[in-house]
Image 1 (cartoon, rainbow, N blue to C red):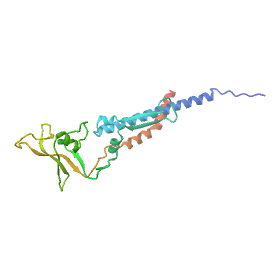
Image 2 (cartoon, rainbow, N blue to C red):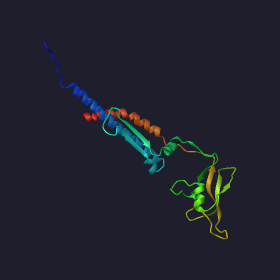
Image 3 (tube, rainbow, N blue to C red):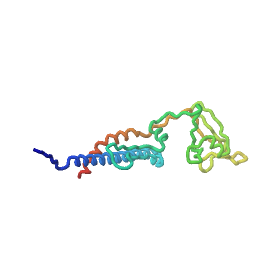
Image 4 (tube, one colour):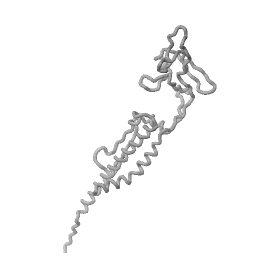
Length: 209
């Protein structure tokens, strides 16, 4: 006697279809989780007043880059990790040479590329020497013996009589600065990770409808 077994529907095909559905669900879930985390981090940076440019430094990528996989993963990162990391941890910043940190006042203006100006750059651009003023209470100063122009910037005085000339504080000098913690990136990362299982289930169910 010869016995045969005919399984309908095809069990192998059914299992292959489930694996395919799983690959699609996991890949879709990781894409969504990565995009959500990128959006959350960008929102934090913008709300902290750190600017749209820094916010747009947050990027995301799903792996594999093409196709679908049960081992799909999402990577979210910043193209300016040092700046973002500093605002996320709130570190204590000290001068590299062990002396002073020069914090520009509004009278210092901006650097050539729009960044924070240094004392050396300020002297080269203004043609003035900065003078050190020690203070026992509060930060010491680097000042310029010149005048304030109509934009509130310290510049050289052209007056031969000394009229309008004043001593303008250009930089505050401090031994160290504690940067305020303005971001909490780990909080959003934990939320995104916790949401992944539900996203996989939701995408798996949706694929069957």
